[in-house]
Image (cartoon, rainbow, N blue to C red; front, top):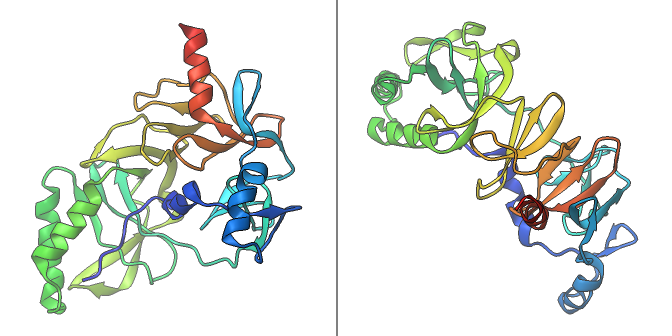
Amino acid sequence: MKMLAIALVLALLLAACGSVATVVNGDYDAETTTEETETTTEATTRPSPVTIDGLVWRVPPMLPHQRIDVCCGFMDEQWRYIDSDTGLLTGEVHGGHGVGGGGFVYDSTLGLFGQGGFGGEYTMLYGMFPVNGFEESVHAMFAQLAQDWDWINVDESVESFVRDATTRQIIPRVDSARRNNLAYPIGGTQTWFLTQEAYTGEFAVFENLARITPWYDGIRPAWEWQWLAVLQNDTWMIVDFEGRPLLPIQFANFWFICDDTAFARLPNGLYGILDITATYGLYTTERS
């Protein structure tokens, strides 16, 4: 049985860490050859870092975008792709796609961990299970499903489901009492979806079914998890897993590009590309 893949929304951007795009006046030049790209990279896509008020910027905070968001790439408020080296538009527009759902969730009141989901009936919901005895509960669920669907390999399904559930990931907190029962049974049982109202708007990093960070209004991890951008009181900060600020700076928006760079916007400021490692080095030097 093909299980639902559990991945961070940002995982689709991993290729951007090493990508090189040639930008001419904000437009993507599709005719540029590999040799031309290599010779123009240093001049056009990797400007010298500049330090402003203790922050080191690969691209100064002067980008004209009203908003930067992520969905299969970095995009502005009009769904136009942004180059992750220069911060300029590539000339390509995102085609759009439907609403997702079905990720792992946690009910802290009832001590339940499982797959939630909202939206249409296309989202498979496996249910919520007690954290204590999680694997045994999942095994019982797949054994029941296998009675109706003989193509299900129970042991393989359980192994895959538990592996996906226990990997390090960002988990939303829910009230699983807020759910919609569906009219049709799956595996002889009544299946259900969490409604959007069940999501409390709080997130934490979990590993092996255990919460390893405080709850936040939003979390965006660096690729190797050494940094966390967290949202509280409508501002983003860079913290460690204990919630201790690594940089004493608040941002209006923050998206990791790679482990050491990010699109960042200061309150009442413009977007730029921040060099996190260099800025952290300056901060720790000043502190010592």
